Length: 159
Image (cartoon, rainbow, N blue to C red):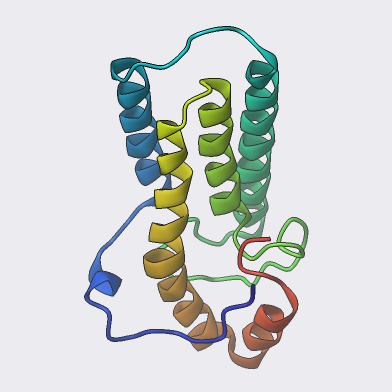
């Protein structure tokens, strides 16, 4: 779903969230909840699927981060963008690093076969989609104008 509106009056917009830190905190909380709440603990197909999702998510995040590094632009969501990256994986999602981290959290929930750990990717998505990404999009619009506006119209925020 393309998001063409930006919200500037939300108090949460001033909150600084660093996506890798948020993903780590949510993962730790999910693991604690997983092992403290009673759930079945057996080995099954979900272990393989979970590991495939984790590997894919890590691969996507690292590939996207390396693409930014190669272009000399910041990976800091509160930094100043210095380059407009249009090469893969940025041609099918505007936020591949975040998508990759969300897939990692999902993969770990699948691996642990844990319903409660599904809160991690859901909270991660909600926090980034409402707080982090709109601020980044404003910075990109300021820096790159119509070029970024056209990109937003062609490439989805997540998938």
